[in-house]
Length: 146
Image 1 (cartoon, rainbow, N blue to C red):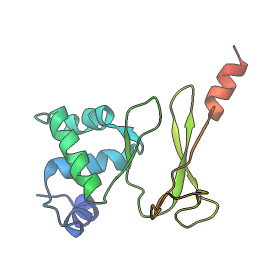
Image 2 (image 1 turned 90 degrees about the vertical axis):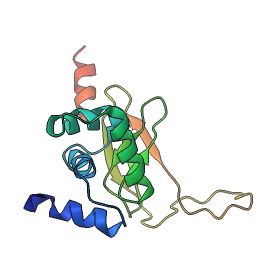
Image 3 (image 1 turned 120 degrees about the vertical axis):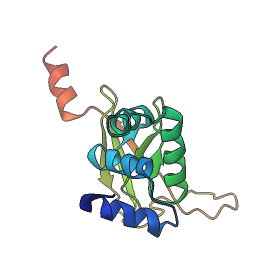
């Protein structure tokens, strides 16, 4: 039986036309607690509640939920793909080059795409991804103390 706190997650899964399963609920719950997590991090969270779950199963759930539009997959250069529940808006990311922390940052334009290429080469552009790289406040402090 699904707990009352899982009902919004169940509704979102059903709303995307997918069957509600414990692994799907567990993956969404893990990403509620830890946005911008990679598959290994999601797997470690899910395994606590569903010990029989495999990493491959988590990858399958992440792919299905991303394809259904319930998750957004971001692929920062030089790191594993990460997943987030914040979808349907036009936001970008700040990534710490030292510790890898990822933070959402709203687009100043507010509508997609917020950047327009000089030449679209015939593409119908619908999204522009911007990644800002730098040091988070914690890493700035620790780097100054070295």
